Image 1: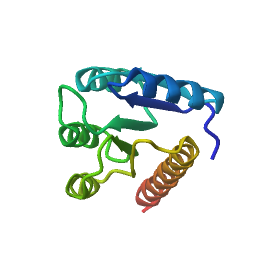
Image 2: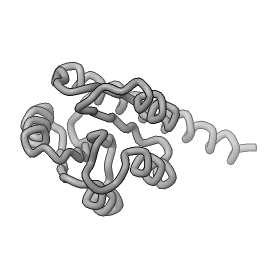
Image 3: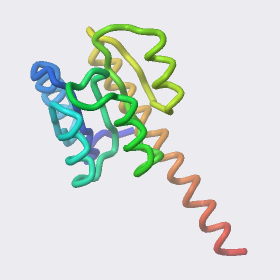
Image 4: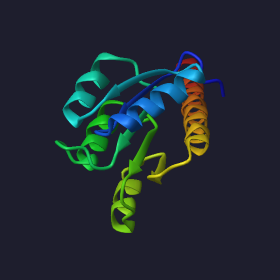
Length: 141
């Protein structure tokens, strides 16, 4: 899966993480938008066409679960990747039940994160193609 012309929205209060992801993903041909808070994330999410969402587990203003629920109501198929500073099995279980695509903890491997993004885009494209085929099938009956 090519990352060219895809948009990744990154929400992390840590400017170093935002800058790292901006630099590394831009080198892959990805358009990267960054924000530092949950409010900014939701504002930008509704203004741009986002292909993958990467969100820090502990944003300063909105709980991650609330963000996931809000985003999934609007765009159920969007892949969401959660990055957590602290590993918590309970938190991981809760957000996985909400349908996130990938979960990792800091420090993370940028190469593994890039693979997760590629896999997320491929899964989203496959799901979209399957939905398109079902719509065509229903229309022809």
